Structure formats: structure tokens, C-alpha cells
Length: 80
Image (cartoon, rainbow, N blue to C red; front, side, top):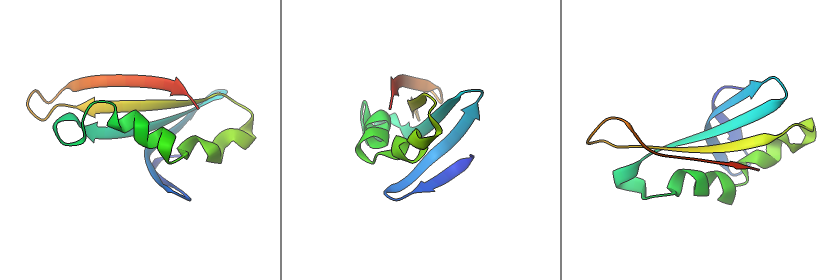
């Protein structure tokens, strides 16, 4: 588990295992990708599939940053 974790359809930006949970993060620049693009990529590419065999909840986390304010603009989560 770590940064740029590869799967069969791409790479999640960050994968963390915390206790009995797995968190997959995708980071995007809001002005370039558009609203919802980070979470959409996690779901469309099936990044959570690689961790289903663990039998623990897999959380998808889409984080979009603003280049203007240099802060988080949007943050979405969903169970895989």
C-alpha cells in the first residue's frame, strides 16, 4: 500500500490500509478535470476491485484541489 499503486486499469494516487479498512485516493486539479472527476476515475477504472479479496470495507476518496486558492475545493467518498 502506498503512492501510485498499480492495477490492471491504471494507478490510484494513494492507497492506505488503516485497521480493517482500505482507502483509495485520487487527486485532481479542479480547474482541469471538472467536478467529480476524481471519484469518477476511481469508480470507472475499478481501482477498488484489487482489494475486495481482503474482506474489509474499501473506501474511494476523490479529492479536487483548486490551483487558484491552493486548497481542497471538493471532497467525495463512496464505498467500492
